Length: 549
Image 1 (cartoon, one colour):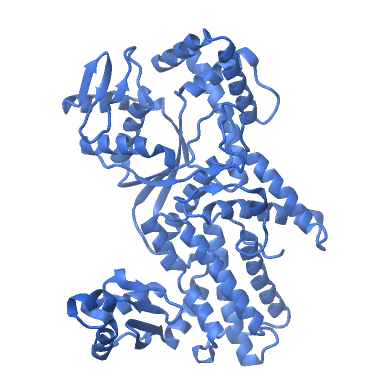
Image 2 (tube, rainbow, N blue to C red):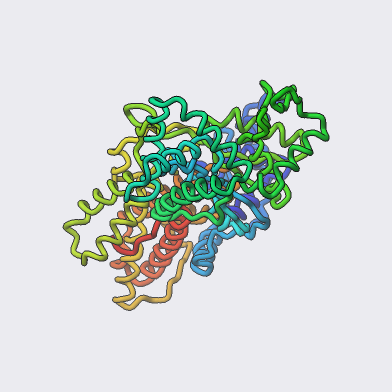
């Protein structure tokens, strides 16, 4: 509903309706700052210009109640009809509220961690950002596919294969067993440097398709992936497909992309094959002297495939991949191909420093999940509910705390992971939003027990707090649209917090079940609409909307 109100404001402003100058405001439902932009060229004060614009405005929208000029700002206020329609639409559309009727297919590649051990807390920031973006695009109406690009040809995997051969696998969660083999193999190489040649040979034979070596690589990688899948599923993340980079060697796409590079005379062959472009800071090797390809060669082939199958594709990458991503994009554009849209995120570090899988210094996602579950179980220990319900609620709160903690920070901002912050169940957390949803459900349950009337929202009854809450509820589709345009899921997390906060302010000041009949019907309609928005929003963040807490 807010999207239509916004469109009507732009239309009403006419030649001054540039959306760049529209702002959400504490003093109005929508404000235009265009007068400040025009002041210099018109040699008038912003106040004079805003007064003149407002005087000329003709409002033809049922959703615009009034327009005011205040100190250079052009302030728009929604009508009662807008408020009534907002509640009606939310109640009618229910689980579909937020759907934008967007069209098209989109591919989102995220996580794609090396299969040499478990996911750590840095990896899951990638996973949660990617999964949240996928959920929001899907809600908007798009056909979304998610990929995990499996780096099965890297040196890390060859070292893992060495570790499995020399040290075997311990009886523990598969990805953790693989990590021990990988760490142990690195220690072996430090004391037996001659093993380096064996690792190089493993990589060469795998690319050549040696059946015995292929079998060893696939077994090691699939073992790691089985554990990684378990971890991802425990925080409500699933990929549609796991795409192995070696497949682009086997299916001919690597040969195809190299031919395309050769046809454009982009490859310099002096031992190794190198791409040298003015746009690149240095030459990029795509084939070694021994004939084997590099990660970027296979990634170019993968993106050739993406171009052939999708109009839009997004990659979620760590900020340390910026140079690589720039090289990849420039080469793709030189080939006449579309580069990926990229969400770069800063890494999560520990208070004591950075993490390294090779040295065995990391906090696994499994450890994080288990620790948070233990803390939520302590919080719920004294609640009067059966143990199975406590367990389910504890798990939902733990997953919510993790997912929200990682998505609420803008991707470009670094995170120093701190246990105390991750386990803070006060305001500004997922549990606060989940509790707000549970409170709305509780109010509605009690209303049903007492004989719930037909819900009837009447705009003319609105107090300031009611009006503010309805305006916030109207913005769910707007924030979905913002995430699609900006690729910043943190803005949606911030929005959902504002819904929960505004709802609790409303509830604190306005009796619902104890209100007289007419007000009771009106306020129950607002509560039910809030429940729907909180539920839909939590699901878009991959968090379970609990009905009891």
